[in-house]
Length: 163
Picture 1 (cartoon, rainbow, N blue to C red):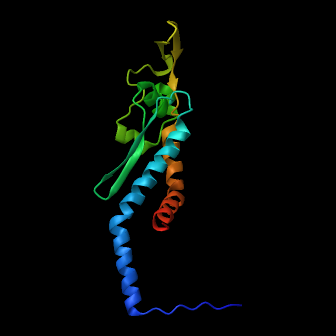
Picture 2 (cartoon, rainbow, N blue to C red):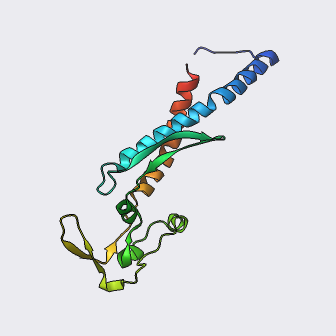
Picture 3 (spheres, rainbow, N blue to C red):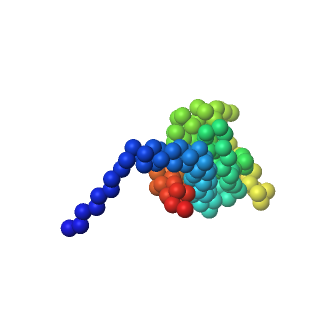
């Protein structure tokens, strides 16, 4: 079996440390931006074909100091109702508590309770409901992005330093 030996000097180690410092200053922000952007693409792919989420758009990656920020958004009110749920049904099948608290979301705000309410639909008809459970599509997309983060960050790091 062949043996591979590499001898390192103090000078070569110092040179390697200097190269790593250059990499840190120049390439890490670029790697972070590309990673955040790809994660937003993945999140958009997960929700864009789901009914009620089709108007979802990507927020492109930007740097805020040392933090890369990207994501997805849907400004349609219906998407918010679908994500968090509504009425008495939503309160029995709520979204994740921390997300609800941050958004200030409340269930059954008009105190309809079990009697529910009537609402208009696009064709001019009316329907009755007691609400809807939280679908959590954005939440699931975020959880998946968190799982994908190490893999995508590694790919972007190797792509950047492997040039």
